[in-house]
Length: 125
Image (cartoon, rainbow, N blue to C red; front, side):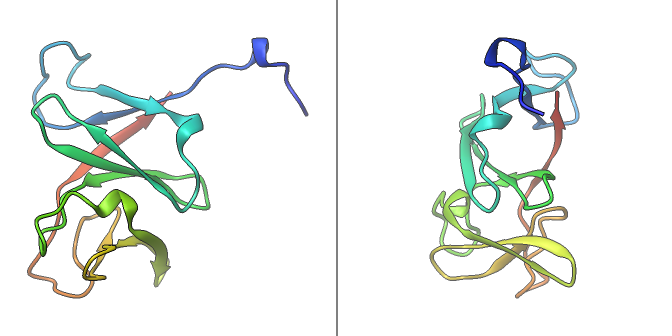
């Protein structure tokens, strides 16, 4: 089925960067991008109000994830530019610099379990 552009609804990706509501947001949720800008297998960096960055991804099944964009091994804000894949059914992103893989759901580094990145709760609607 094809819909005319004027009858489609824009879906927005929202993150909850903290457990408490932040000023200017609705119960802590922050709109970061339209779903239409996400391409499966590619990341998008979003600047958060506190100056940090989130890396937002859509996997090939259409699930959306958000993690901290900062690579904890290099300190560079590059995870949104990493390569995505799956390992044992879990979506991950590999840092474009040193290639460590981070589970997109938990933030756990698959190559060094003592390291993890922050994950964000995601809503699409």
